[in-house]
Image 1 (cartoon, one colour):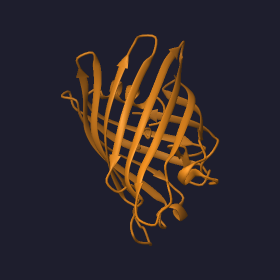
Image 2 (cartoon, one colour; image 1 turned 135 degrees about the horizontal axis):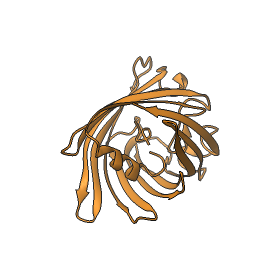
Image 3 (spheres, rainbow, N blue to C red; image 1 turned 90 degrees about the vertical axis):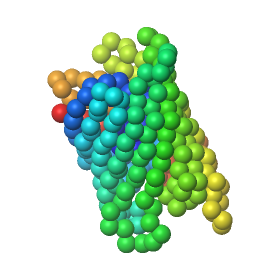
Length: 232
């Protein structure tokens, strides 16, 4: 899910936790004009069809699978991302806590080394009534074959009538493998989402600071994404 990937981008820590409260199985499907993850297009600025299945238990345990098409040239010849994840979320005192593990899988890679990646996260969030805020820290011992990684995700969201406004700031920090140049960069986004007749609509602007792996890359920079989704 890359955590929008059910929702990662904006307000993910808060929006994800609230959905975990409902026990049972669910499914989701989405169509977006561009699949952007942490400020970088994953399918070369093209459309993506996405979907997944989730299980949430009353205890707070959750697990699921999520998939999307991606640009084959960016993922060793694989044109599909298939994520698997599990974790636990619930209230701890005055805040909500989310602890989990995620694996990014890219089936059918024709080039080695493979870029399949394991990532772990701990997130804390709080609903202040007029707005919600969350901070999530991610860690991978080998992030897409670049080196060990930490990602800091700060999110804010606020309901305004039927629309939820959201803002996000993220920082990627990588301890690069020998021979690699500095990969660190920052990304940020502003978005608005709403539900209507059972469908979800999201409009989000994303950008990066044009440093590290994003310096001079056409895959980073300004993106405006529009996504229509449906949960079952």
